[in-house]
Amino acid sequence: MSTPQTHLETLPRSIHLLMAMGFLALAAFPFVGSEFYTAMVVRMMILAIFAMSLDLLQGVSGLVSLGHAAYFGLAGYVLAFITPQNEPISLYTSLPLAVGGAALAALVIGFLVVRTHGIYFIMVTMAFAQMVFFIFFDNKALGGSDGLFLNFRPDAGAIDLENKQVFYYFTLACLLAVYVFLRRLLWSPFGRALSGIRVNEHRMRALGFNTFSHKLAAFTLAGALAGLAGYLWAAQTGFVNPELMGFHMSAHAIMMVILGGMGNFAGAIVGAFSFEYLLHLFKDLPDVGAFKTGKHWQMWMGLFIVALVIFAPKGILGMLTRAFGGPTDRQESGHD
Amino acid sequence: MDFVNFLIQLLNSVQYGLLLFMLAAGLTLIFGIMGVVNLAHGSFYMLGAYLAWSLAAKTGSLTLAILLGTLLSMAFGLLLERLLFRHFYHRDHLDQVLLTFGLIYVFEELRSILWGDDVHGLPVPELLAASIPLTENLSYPVYRLFMSGVCLVLALGLYLLISKTRLGMKIRAGAFNRDMTESLGINIRLIHAVVFSLGIGLAAIAGMIAAPVSSVYPNMGSQVLIMCFVVVVIGGIGSVRGALIAALLVGLVDTFGKVLLPQASGMLVYVLMAAVLLYKPEGLFKQ
Image (cartoon, rainbow over all chains, first blue to last red; front, side):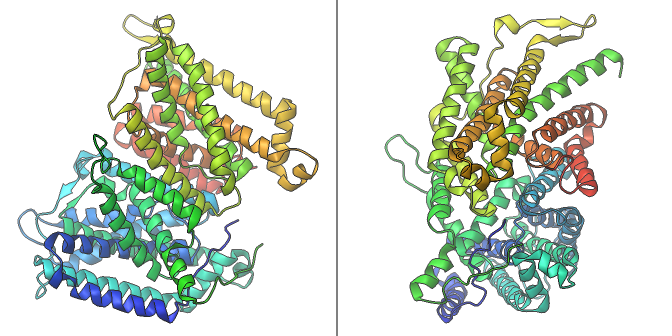
């Protein structure tokens, strides 16, 4: 069954240094980047939060969810619903409501799905996410296939989120807070127990851990953090549609986590940035004669994914670590 | 709902269920025997439909198109198995998910490059274009009965193949214990290739015979893929019998849901799945 892949839980110093440099670069970016690219970086940061929330399930706990976008989209929809037509809603009421809504959905669905294992878990998370997708897609009252518009970003008192720069730094602060929180969680008793469940659930149960409630708690927390990302996404773009909770969004999140290297959250950030940038590159390819290369971006993305899984299943951080001579693959044993 | 309406809906649900079974059978076999999650299974359904459409236009006969298309798609399945899937039988499920998701994108674009992004209709063959009158203004198209018939024949064939033939015996042995089967001198690689290509063939045939009814359109595979996942989860992974019963169940719930509870019809199938999961987390017929 699920053979544990490399999980660089302890990041080598070189990676720490790179992450710190990356953070400084992000902090300086609005001063040098154009408006277009600044907005793109905001989207990347939001997706990085989303990818980190999935990494808690996929990389840390070994639960591959193919329906994580449901909670991302749901929180965005909550914000879209509770934002009035002609005035903004307070951040301090809307954020807890949106994140709480996503967490509640994750709790209910999680209650059903975490009792399944391996391939069932993949299929069932995907099916439930699809159910959420169709609830919104089929109901005109919920926006239907067109989605909903938001006229205002949330009102945060002294912090003016309508200002693009302020929103950029607000998102950056969220990204940093979620990263620090998850890194601490990873080394907490709860995080260690989740890692243990990934490596050998039977043994954890024999040791007296209630694995069901651990997994359910992780699933709910991941749903809540995905909700935070979805909330920010809706506030940034001013628009939500069912695609946000669709199958492709969920699959893209898995891709981001893999692309960066899973199980350590830093990889999820690197993966989200790289994936979004690649998407941008592929969609912007110049035409070759009559052949619209950019229009067929899915072809290049598909081939890239196939190549990635064949040649570099450990992701960018895995390659970097090898290049820098950091700790090599830690052999994780413990099969049933 | 009077009796005639009920009969029509019942026939529709059986027809939909059997069509789902054709796809789910391949999905569940490929998982049960090779341990591979194939997200791209729906793409073969789409490929089948487009093959039927373009070959029927070239040859002028849907029957010929279906025969040719089956051969082509099975050959394509063999090629894919040899080049890609064979190397993923022992990999993590996560890697398989990624590989097959990447393939969905590639197949979708190949379809776009080869056949364009338009929706196409495919006429029902003249021989089967008639309708059976049930009352003065209600009738049932013969072609739908034909679809159910083809699916039933193939399901029966699959059953006989797996449970009564020597090849079927080897397939079952391989699913049960791969190493032991191999050490008995059975070429397990060949068995895998045959099963994979069979699964792809079934999915493509489902797409081809559904094409005149559902028409041919981009992304037609993803919707049906998720329904097949539901079928496989309800039936129990690896169980062909479970897939048949679950497919008929899903067909019934979906079709009657659309008539009786139109506002919640999209959800009902998932509610069914949730109920089964609460009762039996491994599906109804887990092997």
